[in-house]
Amino acid sequence: MVCESWKSKLDTYLDGEVSEQEMRGFDAHVKDCSSCSSDALSRVQMKRAIHVAGKRFTPSAEFRKRMQHSVAPVRRRNFRLGWMLSSAAAAILVIGMLSLPYLRNRSGKDDVFSEIADLHVATLASSSPVDVISTDRHTVKPWFQGKIPFAFNLPELQNSEFTLLGGRMAYLEQTPGAHLVYDVRKHHISVFIFQERSLQAGLYTSTFSPAKLTFNTETWTEGGLRYFVIGDASPADIANLAKLFKGTS
Image (tube, rainbow, N blue to C red):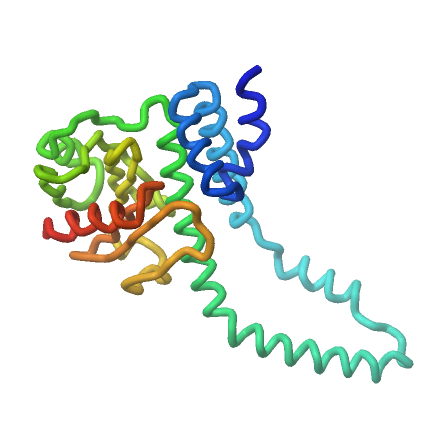
Protein backbone atom coordinates (compact mmCIF):
# COMPACT_ATOMS: atom_id res chain seq x y z
CA MET A 1 0.00 0.00 0.00
CA VAL A 2 1.11 3.57 -0.66
CA CYS A 3 0.64 4.57 3.00
CA GLU A 4 2.76 1.78 4.46
CA SER A 5 5.94 3.85 4.18
CA TRP A 6 4.22 6.68 6.06
CA LYS A 7 2.73 4.46 8.76
CA SER A 8 6.07 2.78 9.45
CA LYS A 9 7.38 6.17 10.64
CA LEU A 10 4.17 7.43 12.25
CA ASP A 11 5.34 6.95 15.85
CA THR A 12 8.60 8.75 15.07
CA TYR A 13 6.59 11.60 13.57
CA LEU A 14 4.27 11.86 16.58
CA ASP A 15 7.29 11.89 18.91
CA GLY A 16 8.79 14.77 16.94
CA GLU A 17 11.91 12.79 16.03
CA VAL A 18 11.95 13.43 12.28
CA SER A 19 13.62 16.23 10.39
CA GLU A 20 11.82 19.51 9.76
CA GLN A 21 11.42 18.63 6.08
CA GLU A 22 9.95 15.21 6.92
CA MET A 23 7.70 16.82 9.53
CA ARG A 24 6.19 19.15 6.94
CA GLY A 25 5.74 16.23 4.56
CA PHE A 26 3.97 14.23 7.28
CA ASP A 27 1.76 17.21 8.16
CA ALA A 28 0.63 17.54 4.56
CA HIS A 29 0.04 13.80 4.16
CA VAL A 30 -1.90 13.39 7.42
CA LYS A 31 -4.20 16.27 6.48
CA ASP A 32 -5.11 14.62 3.15
CA CYS A 33 -5.09 10.92 4.11
CA SER A 34 -8.05 9.79 6.23
CA SER A 35 -6.42 6.41 6.96
CA CYS A 36 -3.19 7.88 8.32
CA SER A 37 -5.00 10.66 10.19
CA SER A 38 -7.23 8.11 11.93
CA ASP A 39 -4.20 5.96 12.78
CA ALA A 40 -2.33 9.02 14.11
CA LEU A 41 -5.29 10.00 16.30
CA SER A 42 -5.57 6.52 17.83
CA ARG A 43 -1.83 6.45 18.56
CA VAL A 44 -1.95 9.88 20.20
CA GLN A 45 -4.83 8.71 22.39
CA MET A 46 -2.90 5.54 23.31
CA LYS A 47 0.23 7.55 24.19
CA ARG A 48 -1.88 9.86 26.33
CA ALA A 49 -3.48 6.91 28.16
CA ILE A 50 -0.08 5.35 28.84
CA HIS A 51 1.27 8.68 30.06
CA VAL A 52 -1.63 9.12 32.49
CA ALA A 53 -1.43 5.49 33.70
CA GLY A 54 2.27 5.89 34.40
CA LYS A 55 1.50 8.65 36.91
CA ARG A 56 -1.46 6.93 38.52
CA PHE A 57 0.32 4.23 40.53
CA THR A 58 3.20 4.60 42.99
CA PRO A 59 4.85 1.88 45.11
CA SER A 60 3.58 1.61 48.67
CA ALA A 61 5.77 2.29 51.70
CA GLU A 62 5.66 -1.41 52.58
CA PHE A 63 6.90 -2.37 49.11
CA ARG A 64 9.76 0.14 49.35
CA LYS A 65 10.70 -1.25 52.78
CA ARG A 66 10.81 -4.84 51.47
CA MET A 67 13.01 -3.80 48.56
CA GLN A 68 15.38 -1.92 50.85
CA HIS A 69 15.76 -4.95 53.11
CA SER A 70 16.36 -7.24 50.14
CA VAL A 71 19.32 -5.20 48.91
CA ALA A 72 20.78 -4.20 52.32
CA PRO A 73 24.41 -5.41 52.96
CA VAL A 74 24.60 -8.27 55.49
CA ARG A 75 28.32 -9.05 55.67
CA ARG A 76 30.38 -7.33 58.37
CA ARG A 77 33.53 -7.37 56.23
CA ASN A 78 31.74 -5.12 53.77
CA PHE A 79 30.95 -2.57 56.50
CA ARG A 80 33.69 -0.14 55.47
CA LEU A 81 32.78 -0.33 51.81
CA GLY A 82 29.10 -0.03 52.69
CA TRP A 83 29.83 3.06 54.82
CA MET A 84 31.73 4.65 51.94
CA LEU A 85 28.95 3.87 49.51
CA SER A 86 26.37 5.19 51.97
CA SER A 87 28.28 8.44 52.29
CA ALA A 88 28.46 8.81 48.53
CA ALA A 89 24.77 7.98 48.26
CA ALA A 90 23.98 10.57 50.92
CA ALA A 91 25.93 13.21 48.99
CA ILE A 92 24.09 12.30 45.79
CA LEU A 93 20.80 12.38 47.66
CA VAL A 94 21.51 15.88 48.99
CA ILE A 95 22.38 17.12 45.49
CA GLY A 96 19.28 15.42 44.13
CA MET A 97 17.06 17.02 46.77
CA LEU A 98 18.49 20.44 46.02
CA SER A 99 17.87 20.07 42.30
CA LEU A 100 14.53 18.26 42.62
CA PRO A 101 12.33 21.41 42.68
CA TYR A 102 13.99 22.65 39.49
CA LEU A 103 13.70 19.28 37.78
CA ARG A 104 10.11 18.81 38.85
CA ASN A 105 9.24 22.30 37.66
CA ARG A 106 10.99 21.83 34.34
CA SER A 107 9.49 18.38 33.84
CA GLY A 108 6.02 19.73 34.57
CA LYS A 109 6.43 22.48 32.01
CA ASP A 110 7.74 20.07 29.39
CA ASP A 111 4.84 17.71 30.12
CA VAL A 112 2.36 20.53 29.59
CA PHE A 113 3.91 21.50 26.27
CA SER A 114 3.98 17.85 25.18
CA GLU A 115 0.30 17.54 26.03
CA ILE A 116 -0.50 20.76 24.16
CA ALA A 117 1.44 19.43 21.14
CA ASP A 118 -0.50 16.14 21.35
CA LEU A 119 -3.79 18.02 21.37
CA HIS A 120 -2.69 20.04 18.33
CA VAL A 121 -1.57 16.92 16.41
CA ALA A 122 -4.77 15.06 17.32
CA THR A 123 -6.79 17.95 15.92
CA LEU A 124 -4.87 17.91 12.65
CA ALA A 125 -5.36 14.16 12.40
CA SER A 126 -9.08 14.27 13.16
CA SER A 127 -11.65 14.06 10.40
CA SER A 128 -13.66 16.67 12.37
CA PRO A 129 -11.06 19.09 13.75
CA VAL A 130 -13.63 21.57 15.12
CA ASP A 131 -17.06 21.20 16.70
CA VAL A 132 -18.28 24.66 15.77
CA ILE A 133 -17.36 25.53 12.19
CA SER A 134 -17.37 29.23 11.41
CA THR A 135 -15.10 32.06 10.35
CA ASP A 136 -17.22 34.49 12.39
CA ARG A 137 -15.91 35.13 15.90
CA HIS A 138 -19.41 36.18 16.96
CA THR A 139 -20.58 32.64 16.20
CA VAL A 140 -17.62 30.77 17.68
CA LYS A 141 -17.30 32.66 20.97
CA PRO A 142 -20.96 32.17 22.12
CA TRP A 143 -20.66 28.43 21.41
CA PHE A 144 -18.37 28.07 24.44
CA GLN A 145 -20.80 29.70 26.87
CA GLY A 146 -21.89 27.17 29.49
CA LYS A 147 -19.21 24.71 28.37
CA ILE A 148 -16.20 26.30 30.08
CA PRO A 149 -16.06 28.23 33.41
CA PHE A 150 -14.68 31.47 31.97
CA ALA A 151 -15.15 33.96 29.16
CA PHE A 152 -12.62 35.20 26.62
CA ASN A 153 -12.42 37.51 23.63
CA LEU A 154 -11.49 36.68 20.06
CA PRO A 155 -9.52 39.13 17.91
CA GLU A 156 -10.79 40.93 14.84
CA LEU A 157 -9.03 39.39 11.82
CA GLN A 158 -9.93 41.98 9.23
CA ASN A 159 -6.87 43.14 7.26
CA SER A 160 -4.85 40.20 8.62
CA GLU A 161 -3.67 37.00 6.94
CA PHE A 162 -5.39 34.76 9.46
CA THR A 163 -8.69 32.92 9.04
CA LEU A 164 -10.71 31.48 11.90
CA LEU A 165 -11.79 27.90 11.09
CA GLY A 166 -13.76 27.18 14.27
CA GLY A 167 -13.38 25.84 17.79
CA ARG A 168 -13.76 22.87 20.06
CA MET A 169 -13.47 21.90 23.72
CA ALA A 170 -10.06 20.92 25.07
CA TYR A 171 -8.84 19.43 28.35
CA LEU A 172 -5.42 20.02 29.91
CA GLU A 173 -4.74 18.20 33.19
CA GLN A 174 -8.49 17.51 33.31
CA THR A 175 -9.12 21.27 33.12
CA PRO A 176 -11.66 22.34 30.47
CA GLY A 177 -10.68 25.07 28.06
CA ALA A 178 -11.18 26.50 24.60
CA HIS A 179 -9.35 25.36 21.49
CA LEU A 180 -9.49 27.70 18.50
CA VAL A 181 -8.11 26.72 15.10
CA TYR A 182 -6.76 29.30 12.64
CA ASP A 183 -5.33 29.08 9.15
CA VAL A 184 -2.53 31.12 7.61
CA ARG A 185 -1.04 30.23 4.22
CA LYS A 186 -2.26 26.61 4.48
CA HIS A 187 -0.79 26.20 7.96
CA HIS A 188 -3.09 25.40 10.88
CA ILE A 189 -2.44 27.12 14.19
CA SER A 190 -4.06 26.11 17.47
CA VAL A 191 -4.86 28.59 20.21
CA PHE A 192 -5.63 27.05 23.61
CA ILE A 193 -7.10 29.03 26.49
CA PHE A 194 -7.34 27.75 30.08
CA GLN A 195 -7.82 29.21 33.53
CA GLU A 196 -4.37 29.80 34.99
CA ARG A 197 -5.37 28.92 38.55
CA SER A 198 -6.61 25.49 37.45
CA LEU A 199 -3.23 24.46 36.03
CA GLN A 200 -0.22 23.24 37.97
CA ALA A 201 1.80 25.74 39.99
CA GLY A 202 4.79 25.38 37.67
CA LEU A 203 2.95 27.38 35.02
CA TYR A 204 2.68 30.55 37.04
CA THR A 205 5.81 32.00 35.50
CA SER A 206 5.13 34.54 32.77
CA THR A 207 7.20 32.83 30.09
CA PHE A 208 8.85 29.48 29.55
CA SER A 209 9.87 27.30 26.64
CA PRO A 210 9.69 23.55 26.03
CA ALA A 211 12.97 21.67 26.09
CA LYS A 212 12.28 19.93 22.80
CA LEU A 213 9.37 20.64 20.49
CA THR A 214 9.06 20.63 16.72
CA PHE A 215 6.30 23.26 16.65
CA ASN A 216 6.68 26.99 17.09
CA THR A 217 4.93 28.16 20.24
CA GLU A 218 4.12 31.19 22.34
CA THR A 219 2.44 31.33 25.72
CA TRP A 220 1.47 34.03 28.19
CA THR A 221 -0.95 34.73 30.98
CA GLU A 222 -3.42 37.61 31.01
CA GLY A 223 -6.55 38.32 33.00
CA GLY A 224 -6.26 35.04 34.89
CA LEU A 225 -6.13 33.02 31.66
CA ARG A 226 -3.25 31.03 30.18
CA TYR A 227 -2.89 31.22 26.40
CA PHE A 228 -0.96 28.79 24.18
CA VAL A 229 -0.38 29.42 20.47
CA ILE A 230 1.17 26.46 18.65
CA GLY A 231 1.64 25.35 15.04
CA ASP A 232 4.09 24.64 12.25
CA ALA A 233 3.67 28.15 10.86
CA SER A 234 6.63 30.51 11.02
CA PRO A 235 7.65 32.07 14.36
CA ALA A 236 6.56 35.44 12.94
CA ASP A 237 3.05 34.13 12.20
CA ILE A 238 2.79 32.60 15.68
CA ALA A 239 3.90 35.90 17.23
CA ASN A 240 1.49 37.94 15.09
CA LEU A 241 -1.51 35.81 16.03
CA ALA A 242 -0.48 36.01 19.69
CA LYS A 243 -0.26 39.78 19.35
CA LEU A 244 -3.81 39.93 17.98
CA PHE A 245 -5.06 37.97 21.02
CA LYS A 246 -3.13 40.17 23.42
CA GLY A 247 -4.88 43.17 21.94
CA THR A 248 -8.37 41.85 22.74
CA SER A 249 -8.22 42.54 26.48
